[in-house]
Structures are given as C-alpha cells and as structure tokens.
Image (cartoon, rainbow, N blue to C red; front, side, top):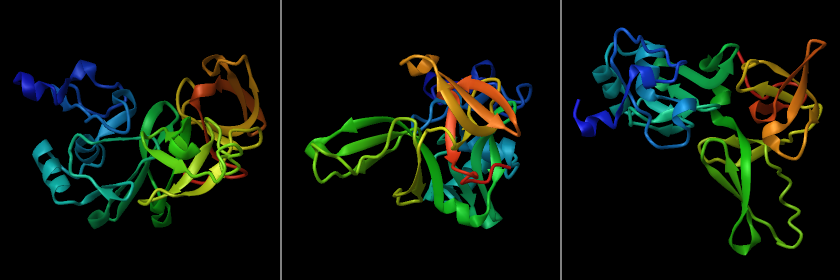
Length: 247
C-alpha cells in the first residue's frame, strides 16, 4: 500500500477493538474520515455495510452501495465509504427497509439497534460546551460535532438559554431543530456510554465529587439497585421513560 493510500487505512492492530472486522481476513481497514466523531468512538460506513449488516461481500460492493445514494445518516445521503458514524447517529438504508441507531450495549461500545420508522426523524445530542457568539447569542456545541445556535433577545438576560453542559437535546432530522430538552439532573433517566457499566441505564440519583467533572461520580438506580459511574459516561435519554428505543 502506498503512503497516500495508507493514510486512508488502518492496520488491524490499530483498529478499535470493538470493530467487528475479522483480523485474520483483513490486513487493512478503512480509517474514518475526519468528521463528527473520533476514531475510537466511530465506525466507517464501509464496515457497517460489509461486516456488520453483511449487505456487501467486499469493499468494492460496499462502495457501490454508497455511491448509489442508498445510505442516509441522520437523514442526509452519505457516499463516503470512510464516513464515521457514532453515538446516537441514525442510519437508514431505504431500499432494504432498514433503520438503526448506534447505541452502546453491555460490553460493547457501539452497536446497531433497530428502531421504528418514526424514530428516524430525531436524535439525542449531548451538550459538550457552550460559546457566546456575535450578538450575544449562544452556540451549543454537541457531542456529534454539530452546533446549534440559540438566539437571545437580550444578551444581558438570556432567558432563552436554559441549557447547561451535559444536558441533552432532542433534535429533529435532517433540519436539526431542538424539539425537547432533557436536563442532567436527579430523577431523569440516563444511559452509560463508557466504562465497566457501558450500556446500562438508570435514574440519576446524585452527583458526587468536586468541581472538576472528570472526577465526579454519578449514582444511578435501576431495579432497586444503585451503582456509580463516571460523570463523563452519563448520557441523559429521557425523564420517566427513554425517548429512544434501546433494544
């Protein structure tokens, strides 16, 4: 493989361990394009089609399917075989009548979870940060690399900005408008997206620790049992019930 083509590929030992790529069958795997998710937390569309869904027997066939415009991610046609899909992304293959959301499951960082058709019109995004932009408006920086602008009428009293870091917003697809808001607060339902308890769900009971969020601990409760997880691994998915299909 030439230097130029190697930049588009990964040796098998460099692949994330959770990718379902037969290491004895393939020496190389496609490197995800720079995009909405990091290498460690995403998977290229080629691998989704060939190795996960088995809709293609080879990379050539997978690329053909993508070039035909048959695959949508979050309601947008994607033709790049290296396009990275990650947490909460919605994948639709209309000709096959297949719709999935990428979610963590116990022991697995991400998996394709079949969802009903009405759920393809929205996704959940966690607020990773906030920025004040021109005019005093507020920009929400979301976990999938996208941004949403919150326009405020009075920068000195931005009553429209009710969002805090690590809150979750439900956004419509593909126009990406906020339709619901799930605060990171006790009583709301959360999904664990990393660590030993990945894929677990539970009600937020309390948050313990100092001001540094990297060291905070969140106590969740599920079925009368409580367990602690890292603050960074908690993703709010609803209030009394999950807003998305989990399995």
